[in-house]
Length: 519
Image (tube, rainbow, N blue to C red; front, side, top):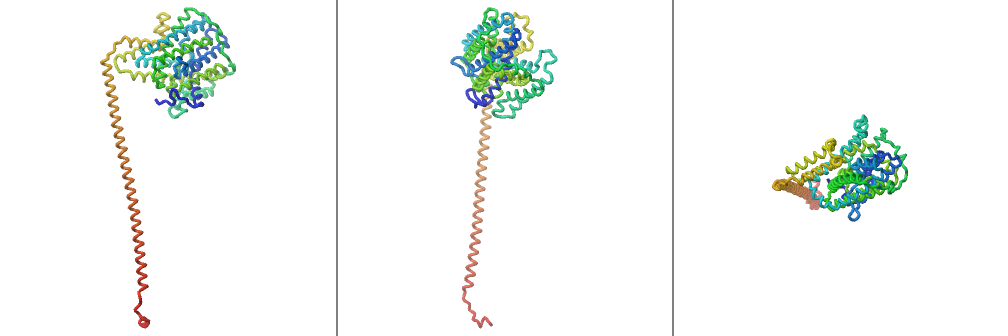
């Protein structure tokens, strides 16, 4: 896919703001959901939950800017949007109920240093991710978060009669249809803004149907500032170990997100790049816990936006970070975005998450078509999807182990890495496959070259025919002109001869005398 704006290009300011708003609208629901759910589960009052949301937006904006711009060895310098990860949801609620918000912030702060430590080993970790493993991870990211879009469309507890009612399905289909239509039939900046146009279009339809709750906007305060260490920090081994386990999962997911994003941005990712990205993840979580925000991680849905729009500029997403900071400082602005109905987000999410899976499939195509790679792909994809579709498969495992394998991305990634390490490589088969691929490429190139030569010959012949035709027309015109000159010349000669003849006749002396003439 050809990129409209490459990684280091700066679009015009108006275009940048429009595209940045698109990323913000796609991510803000997930950013505010985690503090909202955790705060409500722990029993915080509404005003303190609002403070958690403001802190989450502020920390997400800071983390996004760090990842996009990079500061020295920190930041991957890709269009990464940071936010509160759903992976932490269960463990944060458990810690909050047992140890309070001070225990949540202390565990998040301590656990972030594990991510910082892990970043220094990313050069070695990168070797565990050849195309076959990377493709599995990226594909699983797209497929395993599709249920999130489904739940957004349902917008009600599972089993409820209100889940995915006809109006909700209608809104989701309208939003999805707008994104598809704009992407296919429009060009330039309009096509690149397909997501935000779909969100706005779906929002307006939902508003006309009375499905938008504007009370959140009226209840939000105009200005809010950060309150660092509002709850303080307490440290206990149990909560720290629990959250460290989730941090390990987030590192694996972030690695997949970075690789998927690099593929969409058409950039080769090195171990050093991964180190800088994971290091920024850890530092952003450290800053976030000090600002009373939930732990941060990269957002997968924004990877899909880059694939859909072809806008890979990191300056666009850095502007998204600025908008998130404004949302944290001016809650009424964020409240407007929060009022977007979930069925609208779900309809658009189908494309965003599907594009991530598409990027993974493209990477799997690059891997050699051997029986070994086929086994790695089949087993790891099946395992990752199995625990996602039927979580009860791991219900009898020890709690710590079950928490680790609860994520389909982590399960599939771990199995893909293990199979890659233990399955023997048949170099003879791989060489045969490579030779076959090279032969096919050579044959395709030969056919392309032959077709090109035929086209060039046709063009040369057409040009020669056109030249001959032009010469024929020119010769015909010359002949016509010469014929006209000959006709004109003959006419002039005849006229001159007649005049001279008449003159001679008039000038000849008469031999008749008058008398003779009378006779």
